[in-house]
Length: 193
Image (cartoon, rainbow, N blue to C red):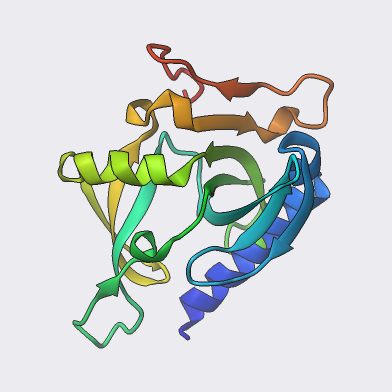
């Protein structure tokens, strides 16, 4: 495992702990149980309304108006061989996509980032169908900052069917009013500036 991959694992674990500390899973998703699994097909198991869901979690630095879907990855920089990305292996009901923002201190340290916005995709199978029908329309983004060298499709939030996404603004979660945004068909996504 290279240094960048190790750094990303530390980053995700710290951000997950911050979400637990903010009681995001229990208070805002209504979970009665949350267990980290770290499997290839899903990251966690969460119980909501007495139903158990497998959930994949993705953490990203910066607040963007899109999500990255990893199509191919290469863990070894010396190799030209690529493997399928996480999208091919995920078998879950929920995807939690978390954007994190640096708090103004040194951005190299994972502790200086805070989860500020979450996107919950439910059910995941509906998103997979949507993505399969439209994949060729989404631009490609190549990154060497993730788990090795990755090739991703960039999916703008505004094109994801509103019936399967909910956006949470974590800056407001501890106040009495948290803007939990369930979108309906035809509604514009104005949440991101």
